[in-house]
Length: 353
Image 1 (cartoon, rainbow, N blue to C red):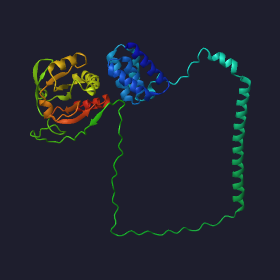
Image 2 (image 1 turned 120 degrees about the horizontal axis):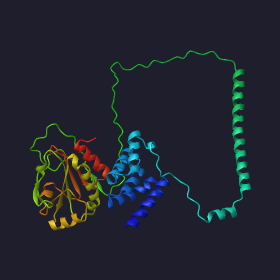
Image 3 (image 1 turned 45 degrees about the horizontal axis):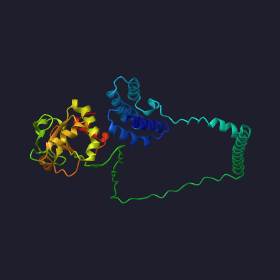
Image 4 (image 1 turned 45 degrees about the vertical axis):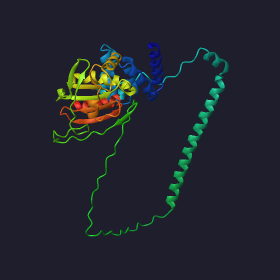
């Protein structure tokens, strides 16, 4: 497996040297999904992405995995200090392929230096003659225009008359507003996503307004935490940013999302982020067995009786409810949310820049 990953990263490096950055993104996405702690993968991704901010975040991941990486630290300082992609010259530039061992001999047999130089010289002569001809035509044309104008007698200028346009006395100009252009950003990795728009928070939402919709207070629930074997409620985390994450062990999209959720939890847990992963319709034994083979250090709640999932009207997996510190649902995501979109939502919920 390690050899396959090494070959894949060598292929990515070759594509980057050829300037084919877009073609490297699927390889890097799959590699990081399988190995989220691959410093080499994050390092290569920092060269494939066009956005400087995302480049910086990739290099920061490299330093989290390998704090002693001098190249990553130097590149991070250059990116943050200059704020543009020209601040650090990528080592992956387009290079000519080295000739094979048999290639020089073949060139000696086939190439004829003298005729080729003669042909190139002849082409240069044709180009030079063409340029000189164009200049000559331009000069002659200019001279002809000057001669013609000098022989035509000047005509006196005639006054120009304007017709006044009268407007109805009741007409007044009314400015009209035009909407600003919008731009839709497409994430570089997305398996499946059905986003729900974020609602604008209201100044006063009555406490009685409870429901699984954006802008309402999140319904409270109490479930067993399989890690601590204690009952846990959503209300226990009042005043904190919480992501309620409904999933199952048989869901392939949930499995694909696990590394992203774990990375974001590790990055923002010290900022106050709480993740409650609700396993729906399965026994505790299934969840424990699944946890043993996947990175899941956050709380895992057992919803074998589908109590919480019924309250939240869950019909697909994974489904995320972003609950801000006031207890209001600020965003709902059905399906996979890519890393950058996930990161932006978490920062907004935590009030981070």
